[in-house]
Length: 267
Image (tube, rainbow, N blue to C red; front, side, top):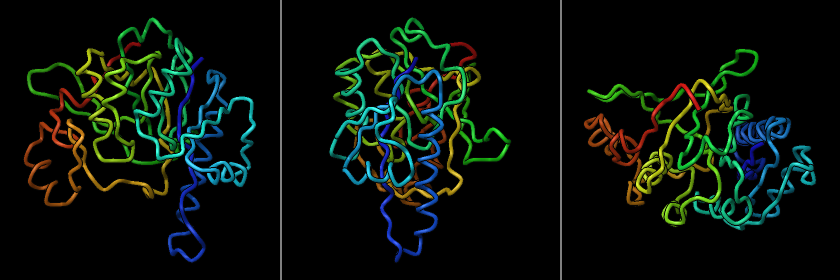
């Protein structure tokens, strides 16, 4: 059994907004994922670290019962950073298999096979598929890289983290950045590796779906984040002068071998 940690939130919108329709559809994508995760037999609880009471009201508007036996509500009172999710896991879920997940992801299969021994000093950097049960495309694909003279394949697109709580406190302290900033997950791989964790992506063993048909990002922080935690405006100039000219880098200038997870065939 796994414990999910997410931040479900109300997408800010009103009827006068020309994007009201697509923002409402985006909200429904988040709700769809929450329902699918609630239906997973291998999910013990979903811990929702919410920001305001309006987020809980949105659950009700979406016909999701906040008192569902699998839902655990925790008033964080702010936009969630990775540090907040890991702090929560360390405090309340010691010894449990925890998954910190993006809100637009739902788990499908393989997670019931994870055992605590699989995650001894190891992190699973979870990569999605983008095809629904009926074969319908649900969003963008993932980026997989190779590195010269290295037999491994590396995954740069990560939407969740599986680990056994507690995490190293130094990881928790350093992971004080939000999910929705470009390169956030690449920095997270870098931090885990920095403190001695093995980071792998069992791509064929753990299936989850990225449900993002709208392709809109209402809460996106328009910056890249560096390994040190500094924010760089995600301008076209930065892309052309740094990212495109330096194909060995990912995120906010992190070498691929430090900011991407190794794809494996086994748990």
